[in-house]
Image 1: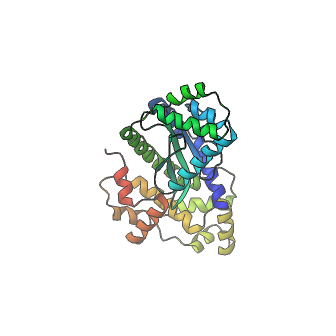
Image 2: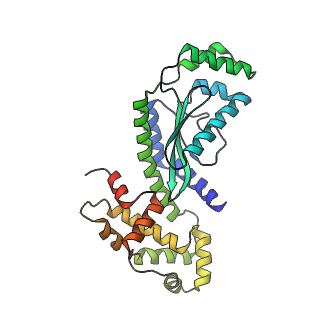
Length: 296
């Protein structure tokens, strides 16, 4: 339950960030599509009332029966996209795509876009949808519905794949920011925790132990372990690992440094351990992470 709440809080913080807001504006202007950043467990329509919301979807979602179809589509795409980007088709033939935001080995949210056709809809396709809605007892103005249906953006498969790749690249930035937010929580912390974080930051390249840091802040190991987890949401080992991985990601920008050099530089005593921890926190190996960085 605690990790779920932390995930929602991180997604909310990411949504408010300048980085996401700038990307959102650029994405909608470039593609003409709606975009949402949402937590894993969300039972709301992601684009409702937002810029570029599809007119057809807005009409359909205003009826409880068809709104349930929309929510079921969101649930399906969420289940399919827990580890990798995934797309599903709704009962009306529109495509929804979700790209996971990963915090280590855990998915905390999705970048979601959709309400589009990947091929131009046919008259027969709309007639089938209209019959389905009539059979469900949905009371709508079908002339208005038809006009909205045919105004739905058509994104060819190749262009759609490019959009998904773009979102996947951005999801890596969101995941990285999630880790930084986890390390730098905004709520007030006791001086003991602030002092411990500063000590860890200054000695992260050393073979740090829980007892060593507890002694540095003049408290018992048991009490320090308990209060540190309470205020950071992480145990001591997890926190130190994330601090070291953040520094490793910065060092990875230097193409002249080998992965092994980076591992020992940030305080890991074993390359195998470094690779395992880096992948757990970022979702990819150090080599894969470096390969995704912009080329100088």
